[in-house]
Structure formats: C-alpha cells, structure tokens
Length: 212
Image 1 (cartoon, helix red, strand yellow):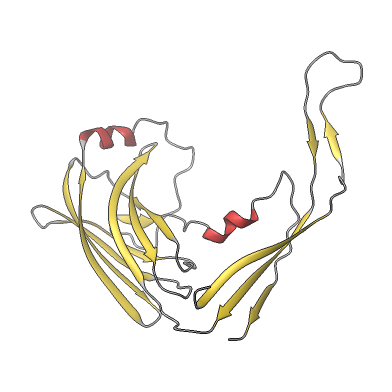
Image 2: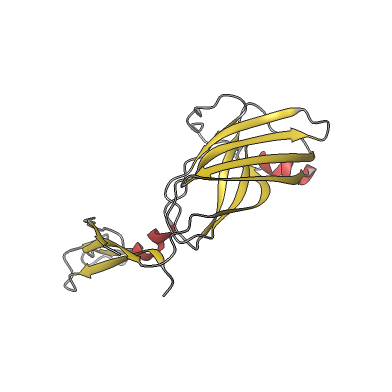
C-alpha cells in the first residue's frame, strides 16, 4: 500500500427491513410499487501511512460545455500526490487578440490523493462566442503553487448546445468574483462513491485518524 493519506468507510446495516410503504390498495388491479427502507450507519475512516507526504496537483486540459443558457469550462485536475489538499487560485481567459474575456477565483474542497476531476467553472455575464482561447491557471496548495497555460477552442456547435435546453427556473447563485466567471459548486468528494446507499439512509459520521 502506498504511503500517505487514505480515506475509506465502514458501513453497518440492519438486515431486517425497518418498514415498507405500498401504493397499491388491497383488491385493486391497478399497478403500484413498494418502498422498502434500509437503515445504514457509515463511519468515515482516514488512515495515514508512513512515508513521503507529497502535495502535488497536475493541471490538464480545459473543455467547454454547458446547457440551459449557461456556459461552463471544465478544468481537468489530478491529485498526483499522497496527501489531501484544498487548492485555491485563479483562472484567466483571453482571446487570440490577448484581450481578457473572463476571469475567476477558484476555491476547491478536499481533493483526495490519486483522484481526478473535471472541475466546472460557470461563465457569467455572456456566453463566449466560437473561437480559440487561452486559459491561464494558478493553483496554490500545501505551501506549493502550480501554474499552467492551456488553449481551448469553442465551436459553433458547442455554443448552440448552451441554448439547446430550457433555462432553469432559478439561476445559479452569484459568484464572489464578479469579473465574468463564477465557480460552480465544488464536486462531492470522490470517496462518496463508497457511500452510495438506498432510498432512505441514516448517516452518522465520525472521523478517526491513525497516527503515523
């Protein structure tokens, strides 16, 4: 097992069905469905193994997307280190004429080691038209800093897709940085995949750290 920080979970379940609800009336020939409730208790466990404690973030490409009238830029990020980090930084987007078209402050939640994400950044004010753009990213974490410049292209088809779905009833909340782009809500921890439950779940969280 590699050195550094590891995150997992212990799940305890009562195998007896705690309750059920049926939508079909007795004697009725109409279809219905039944809901069975499972009760789970989940404990998050963090294990620190001895060895090099390395904080490292690798910046990949930038992919445009979006729908419902909202355009997004997806930043490919990977935690190549051995410890959890909470990166913060900035994104600056310029066009081929070197004119600034948008920028944003970035603040990610806990980023687990050996995981990767496509971090969504919401483009505000106006949709970026078709063209070629340069993204300059700066991320600070664990006393370190990573910089990268990535070019990306927005095509006419991608701009059309932004307007292909109906706009939601409520717009996303305003960003702290009002210069043109706002960060979307950080994605859930990758470890949440371990905690997929059922229809109704009672969750009790406790953290336990093992010393190195």
